[in-house]
Amino acid sequence: MELRHLTTFRAVAKSLSFTRAAAELGYVQSALTAHVKALEAELGVRLFDRLGRRIVLTNAGVSLLGYAENILELTREATVAVGQPGQPQGPVTISAPEVLCTYRLPAVIRRLHQQYPGVQLLFRSTPTGALDAGLIRALASAEIDVAFVLEEPIDPTVSLTVGATDLDGIPVLLTDKGCGYRRVFERALRQAGVHPTIAGEFTSGEAVKRCVQAGTAVGVLASVSVQDELSDGRLTTLAWTGPQLRLSSYLVTHNSRWVSPAVAALRNATSRAFGRDPHNARAHLSEV
Image (tube, rainbow, N blue to C red):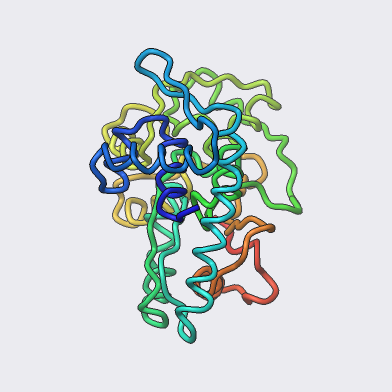
């Protein structure tokens, strides 16, 4: 089997569209069709069925996809390990929420590029930053190499039972459902029997800040994202009567996948940028 045929098959199998796969790979559609037909002829099976204008994987196609993922990932690892000795280099695909991309990761990027200019970081923004099933699958299938997530501390040391009655019925602006700091905030309110009015939900923390500045409602955001606005008086913090609500930042990789030199360099730069010993803090990197 030719690697280019497996690459084409994987792209078509994931998008279930020859048109989208051709755009992704930079081929004309007829070339993709020829690759798939050559692979089917070699294996003696059909890999796709056409249902009207849609295509679906056959049982053989589903089976081959797993092998194709492994073969192509091993090929990439071999190329990096054998063909690029010495300094870490090459692409690292990263998933991260907006708040970390904006306020935490610039220091990591600066430190990494100063030390290892050959490492290329490819970011995919995620609206929530939660370590959910979709993110785990993306790590396992090599769609991404590293994920930065916002989750509760592994060893919580504070109680989440709060007295927040002042917010009962007050209009509140929040980020997307599933966002880490929204999740712990809402749970604390539920446990206290408090029900604020959700005045709006935004995919962008910047939109929440603008609405709060306009006097629309109370906003709930990570403290690291509002330092500039607090220092120049555009926003004001409200006293929180309960225990501190905390989230931690984690760098996550899949334990069954090979750690390339570029990923190892990123992990080291992240630990040092966040003020952690990289040998003693491989997962837990910084609290926000």
